[in-house]
Image 1 (tube, rainbow, N blue to C red):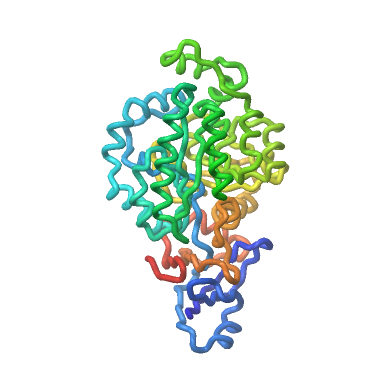
Image 2 (cartoon, rainbow, N blue to C red):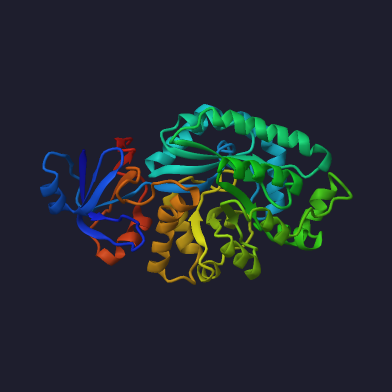
Length: 408
């Protein structure tokens, strides 16, 4: 047994308490969280792990939505508007895919680990990240993605998806969990989506999808016009929307689903997501770089929708650090009261994310996995400012544990 002590402990539990002069007792799982002196007296033979002054113990962070297969991109893709970005992705896809080796993806995962990300939802379109995700010490919910809008190609696309899903299941363990992703309403034929979601329901998989990311998607799905009309006409002059937004949401009514972006979602659609007990995953840096607008956090809160945070991928970001993402979110949402937003963001990468991905971590509570990080602040601060100062100053962790094992 280990006993980790620090100036502050943030369990990230339902009451969101902050424990001064706290401690966490753990082995592979959390045994107890409480005051430092109480746990020292209760567990006198535990291995005592002291931390530097101004340190904070909290759960390992959870990145709910990350694309690792484009990790080789630095400056090759275009930003500022969704369609030019998408066209640049198509233009450079093969080149970027060739550069995104297992070694490179593993290095990016290690960088994420050093910044405190101990679990992630990896969206995999091709399976090129499988080996790296299966070998990483982090906990990975591995979303095998299905997409394809041509009716005649549905069987082929479904066969490819099933093959990748079966390959991922060969690595299934407590730390590697196969899952299902449906790309989006503009790119995935409803028949294909239904078949994939049926498998997810049969096998108890959590599901992820992109939903209403851009004004172009809104115009296409609603009216069959806008920038996507020009985009699709280059491939099929008779292209038209495959379903309405509400019909797309209905497809997921029986699956626990993370809907990523939802920047252009209507109030009615957000209400439907709330009724489905769905999750919305916010990717603020990606939204800004692709010029799609920003998520209405007030509307999300009013509908009581579970909110998580993701970095998306390096195709639309310059960092996979959740601290960088939270800092960006602080600046992107000036309408939100600062300290409350800081708390919301930390919950989005801990307890909210564990709920969405159905992982028994993200909270420092008895019987949860001992996925724990220690972060050291540069100076002392008032207890009510701890969360905000963590977000403002953290780059890397002082200590990281997964299943109670020290990682870095």
